[in-house]
Length: 114
Length: 115
Picture: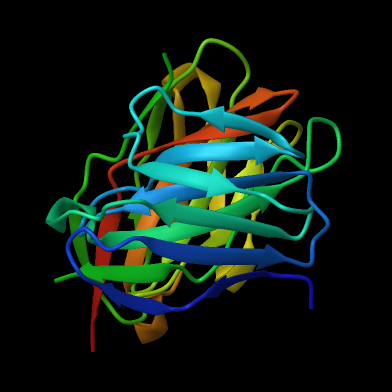
C-alpha cells in the first residue's frame, strides 16, 4: 500500500543535542509537510517542500531546518532541541492543485527532550 | 485569514448512540474541508473531505459530514458509535495554492465512548 512512513516512532534526545527525524513516502507526491503537535493541541505547520522548493512558515523558529534530497524522503533537523520542542512531529504529503490536494499523514515521531 | 472552530472540546457518548461533532469555518472562497481522526500516539487518518458537489459526504468507518454554506459549518456524524471510535477528531480547512496547500485545524474534539 502507498503510504507515509516516519522513523523513528519515538526519539529521545538530550537538551541541545541535534536530532534528525525522517519521513519517506511511496505516494510519489510533489509536496511534503512537517507539523509539530504538542499535547492536546492541533498540529501546527512548520514548513513544506514543493518538489525542491522550500516554504517556511513565518513563525517557525530557526532551530528547525529541513532537507529533501529526493521525491521520496524529507528530513526534519532540530539543531539545538530545547525542552519546549518535546512534541509529536507529523509528516504529511499531498499532490498539487487539480491532482490530489488531500494531505496524507504518517504515524508521527514522538520526541522527548531530556 | 481562514479559521476553524470546534466548539466542543470533549464529548462523551454511549456505545451504540449517535454522534455529532460540530465544526465552523471562516474562509473567503469555496472551502476545501476535511475531517481527520487521531488515536492516542498515532498520526492523523483522513475520514472524509469536501471539495465540491454533493454537500453530504460519506467517509470511512461509517462517518458522514454535511457542508452547509449558509451556516459555515461542516458537522461530522455517525449513527451508531463503536468503542473503537474513541479518539480525537480534527476539522480542517485548506487554502489551496499551486505549490501545496495549507491546512488550518480546529482545536479538536476528544470523544470518549462509554460501554
